[in-house]
Image 1 (cartoon, rainbow, N blue to C red):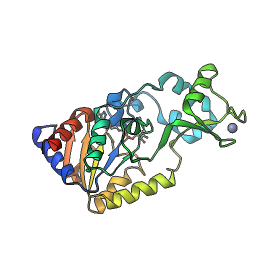
Image 2 (image 1 turned 45 degrees about the vertical axis):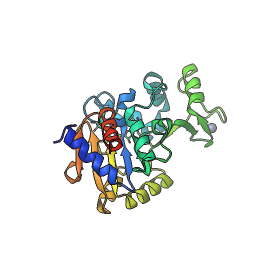
Image 3 (image 1 turned 120 degrees about the vertical axis):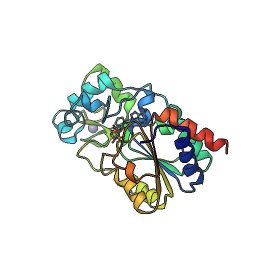
Image 4 (image 1 turned 135 degrees about the vertical axis):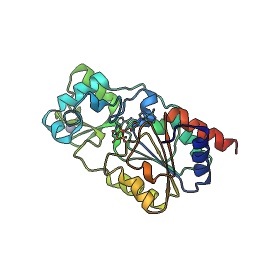
Length: 252
Ligand code: NAD
Ligand code: ZN
C-alpha cells in the first residue's frame, strides 16, 4: 500500500508526464470533496440506503415517488468542482489527458472546464418522461417536485418522470460506451480517480485499457480490485493528491 508520499506522487507525475494519449476514469469519489456523497465503501450512501429501492429501474417504474422523495431530501444542486476536478483540467491543458471518462452524473468535470467528458451513466441535469419521451431541464422538474412530489410530466401529464441517469438494471448509453471503449483502446495511461471499480460494465473500461497496453495510475481513498495491476497506486483524497501531482509536473 502506498500513501501519498512524495515518492508516490513523483512516480505518478512521471507516469502522467510521459502520457501522450492519457485518459482519466473517474467515479463518485472525485466529487466527495465537493460535498456529494459516494455509494460504496466507508461513509458511502449504500451504508444508509438500499440501492435497490432508490436507484433500480424496476422499483422506479413501480413507484417513482420514492425516488423523487429521496431527491427532495438529498439532492445537492449547489455543488462546485474541487481541486481534483481542476487538476484534471490542468492535465488536459498540458497535453497529458485526452478525455475524462466518468461514471458521475453531476456535471462537475464540465463545470471545472474539462472539454472532453464522456458520461457513462448519463447526467442528473436532465429529466425524461417515460410516457411521451420529452426531455426537460432538471431545475424545472425539481421546482415542480417541491410543489408536488412526485412531479408529473409538463407535456403529457404522465407520472413517470425519470432523471437522465442510468439506473441499476438499465443499459449504458451506446454512444458513450463506444467512445469510452475507443479511448481506452488507444490510451497509453489511464488515471483512475475515486472509483471503487466494482460497478460493471463501467469498470470494464480500465480493464480494456490495461489489456491493450495502457499503464494504470490509481488515486482512491480505499483499495480497489485493480490495485495489483496498476503501475502506481495512491491511497488518499483526490483533492489533495492530484494538485500535488500537477505541481510536480509543472515543476518539470
Ligand atoms: P463508488 O461509490 O462505488 O466508489 C467511490 C470510491 O471513491 C470509493 O472506493 C471511495 O473509497 C473513494 N473515495 C471516497 N472519497 C474519496 C476522495 N475524497 N478521494 C478519492 N477517493 C475517494 O463510486 P463509483 O465507482 O463511481 O460507482 C458508483 C456509481 O454511483 C457510479 O455509477 C456513479 O454513476 C454513481 N454516483 C455518482 C455520483 C456523482 O455523480 N457524483 C455520486 C454517487 C454515485
Ligand atoms: Zn410526458
